[in-house]
Length: 161
Length: 252
Image 1 (cartoon, one colour):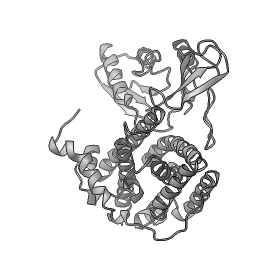
Image 2 (cartoon, rainbow over the protein chains, first blue to last red):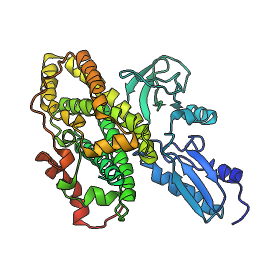
Image 3 (cartoon, each protein chain N blue to C red):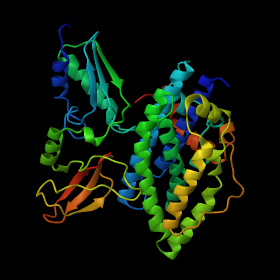
Image 4 (cartoon, each protein chain N blue to C red):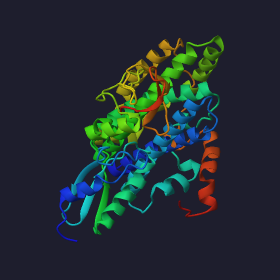
């Protein structure tokens, strides 16, 4: 296939959902690091965690999505450096997380203190800022479980990394 | 020792320590005292096994003989493993696991930070990815150490015992050999002599907050760099490799 542009490929990738949080696309999540269209299509992907079980599923869905668009010569490369950070989640991605009921990571990541966890800015349902952590570990490695002190609804928080 | 051989040996040591640590955590799955810890432990195990895969994949490329992740994990005998002795120690009770993680991860964070700045690009990348995970693990272990050490009389007594139990395996972190020398001199890797005082400072700080005293340095046990393990590794490796050896070449 000839004449594929980088913009086209990026647009196609923007429709590939993250397997664990399908409301986000892999571009919202910031894991698509680079796209090259010279001599076949090469996509550089950053794994979120070393042992993220979704890494292989994401690679397979990228290949599938590009094949459906008629691209045959596809290379997936893992980009470990610089390491993925929640700072790369796009503004649009953060808004989608909130709509979905997950509080987005609240701050730019720094070197956290040994004993201090970051916390959500607000309840994604009612916007109240008073929240209580129920569990630092949630349904996936990247999330913690919280409860809103105002509307009392439980919600998940996407932790800063 | 030439630099490529030293790099390969070093990467395999990192992979073995990560895999064996992850395997010990996997043994605890469904055995944690509460659901939150169940999730924490399983997530941490996943980080370690993920790191082991990255190290082994790189080791396979350095070696250039066609071996991959599964070959290193499942088709070597325990004598070939070079993981730190502390990693293979049996789990014991919850406080034991917390103390073991606190002591080891206080070192591993420093080691990975130094490696993230080393001259071997691939290893630096893996370390930069991994250190973010281990910082988070260490925070978790430190929080529990404080809660248990500064908790009840019974919890204090038990983690003080854990500290006595694992302390003898910590001297090995800094007991470098020619592989460590090559990593430092040829690749700008960790300088163990300068890491040790920083490790002691972190550990002393955590222990102080947990109302625990730093144990005396006596009767250190070392030997993993030469393949001299404690009796516990053989059982761990046998269980870990059983499926793969019973069904050679099995794949998901």
